[in-house]
Length: 251
Image (cartoon, rainbow, N blue to C red; front, side):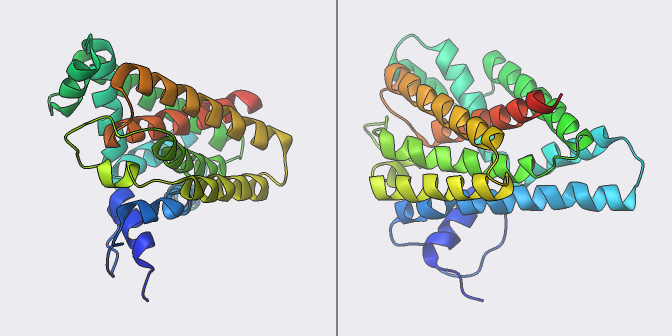
């Protein structure tokens, strides 16, 4: 089976899945597949918890929630978590955009990054626990879709922050309004389909988009734009927010 090159690039960028085929000539073309890739990630994680619950009926859902969180980190090779940690270290550790960008490029993990990772993973695990106990596991899929569409929204709405270029430059500098519209429309379709046209689902999706745009405005102010790390941080924050709001609405 031959995948379209933009889809190949999206899958290779966002996951560890072995994908046959050629990459897109222009990496930004893969952005239209980011939300679909998020759906695939979410579906795999949903399948993990469904399989475990079938194999271990009656077991504590907290165990299955842990598998979802751990699986998410492994499936994405911790790429977005790394971005979150780098963002936290830079955001609170630097006094100028230049210094923050320098800190973000440093591979060392600082105190702010460590705290951010612990708090985010704890929040994500707690939220998934509630959703599994409430028999609403499809939020795992929807969170994957919305968070990856927000990456595209950020890329298309902001300049690349590093004048010298970097890993994420090819995705961000060539991101267009068309990429943005397709990603957001894809997220809307999944939201309406998985939520059975529920106002609750739509409200949570719009809230995540709003927070994502506030995050983007903060990046512009603090960093002068966005980078690959900041797209990853925005993805993790929005994914966790969707799970948290969904859990809060059923608790």
